Figure (cartoon, rainbow, N blue to C red):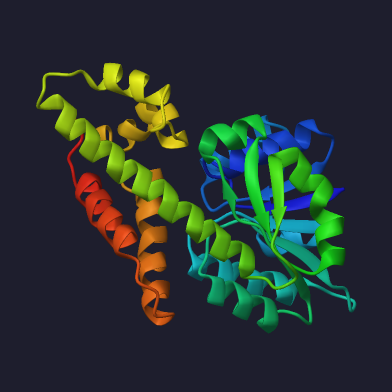
Length: 272
C-alpha cells in the first residue's frame, strides 16, 4: 500500500519509519527540510507537497493544530482527481466538533477516519500506541492494516468522526490529573526529607501506580528541560480544548481546570 504522510515531527517520524519497515511505500511531507531528510534516512520517500501526497492510496495527517489540519484537508480535497474519493486518517488531536465538521465539509472528495493516538514518542517508536478510531466501517477496514503496524491497541467508537477525538480528550484529562497529583504528592513528601525517586518506587508498587508515574523521569524532563512546543505544551493545548468543550456542553470539569492551571505554571518554568 502507498501511504502519504503529512507531519514528520517527533511522532510522525518514527511512525513512518515503522510503516516503511513493514513494507509500505511511504511518501512523506513536512515544512521542515531537516525532518524530511531524517525521514528519508528511515526509508520514507519525499512528497513534494501536501497535495502531492494525494497520489497515495491513503493519506495520514499528523500535525499540531486544528487550523493546520483544516488547511491540509482543503489542499488534499483540491488535489483529488477523476471522481476518486481518498481515505484520510487524521491522527492529530482536534476538537470533536471540528473533526465532525471537517468530515462533512470534505465528504465529496475525502473519507475521513478519526484516529488520535496516545502513548507518546516511546509508543510511536515501538509501534505500541493506543489508537482511538471513528469513521465509516468500510474506511476503517481499509486502513486497519496500517493502524496495526502503528499501534498495539485499536479502539473503535462508531461511524461518526469526532467520537474518537472525544475519547482522546478524556485520556488527556486523566493523564493531566495524574501529573498534577504526582507533582503535589512529591511537593508534600519532600517536606519530610524524602527523595522523589524513593517515593515513586514505593508508590509504583502500590495503588497509586500509573502510566505517568511509570514514566516520571521523562514526564519531569518536560518542565525541567522545558522547550516551547514540547509535549507539555501539547497537553496544555488539549486541556484548554477540554475546558472550552466542557463549558459549551455545560459539564463541570473542576479537576481538568485545576490540572490545566498547574501545568501552565510548570510550562512557564525556566530551563534548569
